[in-house]
Length: 199
Image 1 (cartoon, rainbow, N blue to C red):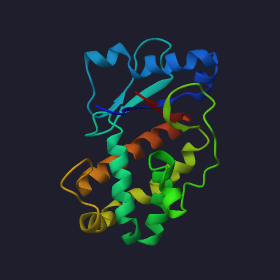
Image 2 (cartoon, rainbow, N blue to C red):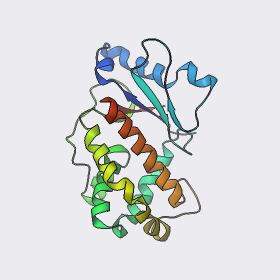
Image 3 (tube, helix red, strand yellow):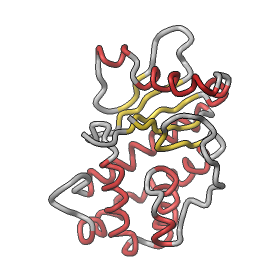
Image 4 (cartoon, rainbow, N blue to C red):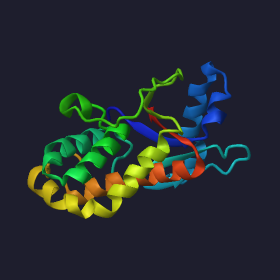
């Protein structure tokens, strides 16, 4: 199946209170909680109901089957359409996309999130490591762009739509961004960080 990602929002101090060598196991247990297996969620939040396990939530993005390929294709579609998007929307979405999934954007365009480099200090296999102080900034970008998603339809349909692969339609692209918007909004509300666990 290839590279997969499990998206979690986590209470940062709770994770950092655990011994460094135990953090990976803690996050893996959260991502693959047996409770989820009994009633798998195809889209949206899963929350543990066990006592003392209220420090994390897992989010299943629509139509991705947890595959990281959807993230690659979303970034690829954005790369093909971004120059045809209104400048003020493009600037904000560049930052949002770069912070969460399209980290190659800055190398290609010179435009990135602008967030300070914060190398992961946890000995864990992560595809995304987003500390709590970054989350309100990213959520703010989402609030700016969310009402203008429909303005992306024409550039997507003309320059990024493809019959093959992932994220082939504007609707799929908008759903993908909206799901990430849900993740950052909820993480901001709780004052938590975001991790994408490599699986």
